[in-house]
Amino acid sequence: MTMRLGLIVLLTCLASAGHGASTVDVLAFDSEQQERRYKALIDEFRCPKCLNTNLSGSDAPIAQDLRRSVYRLVREGQTDQQIRDFLQQRYGDFVLYKPPFAGRTAFIWLIPIGLLVLGVAVLAALQLRVRRQPEVALNEQDSERLSRLLADDD
Amino acid sequence: MTRLRLFVPLILFLVICAVGYVGFSLNDRHQLPSALLDKPFPEFDAVSLLNAERRVTKADLVGRPTLVNVWATWCPTCKSEHDELLRISAGTDIQLVGVNYKDDTNQAQNWLAQFGNPYDLVIVDADGALGVELGVYGAPETFLLDRSGRVVFKRVGDVNPRIWRDELQPRFAQLGVNIDPSLMNGL
Image 1: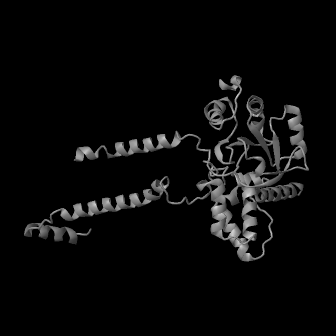
Image 2 (image 1 turned 120 degrees about the horizontal axis):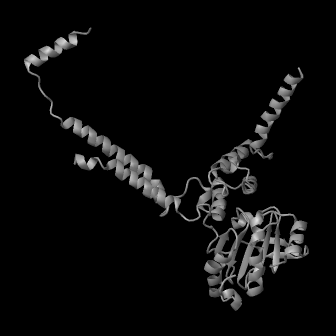
Image 3 (image 1 turned 30 degrees about the horizontal axis):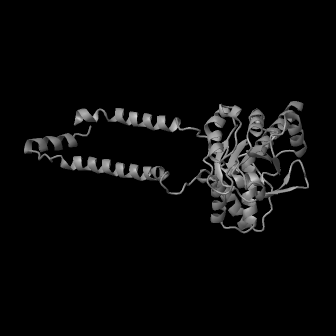
């Protein structure tokens, strides 16, 4: 009995520990729409300290600060684009998971299009090769043999 | 033609190797290019660490070349660059301004009393708001400002003898900062 109780306590602790690890800020919003925008924005930006995590998923102090900044700007009634500009002006393109199309970033934007074109070209070439193969007409003897083979199921 | 096609996998492999080689040897992949470079230092209004009565604004940073160093007592690298900052402070006539970033004011004051104070002025940024304006994402960070308050150089990480020799000293000279001859050959 005590063992079972202990197990339950242990499991409860583990479950709540898992919960505490995710970042949950208790924030008050004027409207549900505001809260949705805040959540979408912190999902959209990348944490400057931790390379491959967004602001909402990071426990780094800088991510907390930036979440607070986004919260403040949302409450102040700034538009999503204004908030993006705010962060980009301070932390550069790095915080945007979607970098703008420019000289340095053209490469990454063009690779998928290039690969698509390459794929289409390869497909087209294969198709062309199949079509170019001459169709061989069967003589009477062969076609007879063919129908015999097809008929001979078992 | 078919003979040539045999080499396609090898060529692909070499291309991947080349991309990987370039990608992984990029310098400081963890270092963000500063968005503030060549831009004016942002406006701010804060309190001085050593004199709570005193307001510090951007006006205090313009008029002479200034080195702004973002530091905190919780940051071990800040301790390791402290001696370099003391030597720069003693050996040049640059204005050295500290930004005490997300720190405890008492601890910061004790720290300066204990290890020496290289700064002409220390700004309190307890909640990191000025840090966000500066694009700070980890301490220490160091900004070099020209006379007009424009950021001409930014360093994320410690100020060490190499950074002094390669980055700071030439720029100090360009900005017309007087450097003690003993510092000309390194820190």
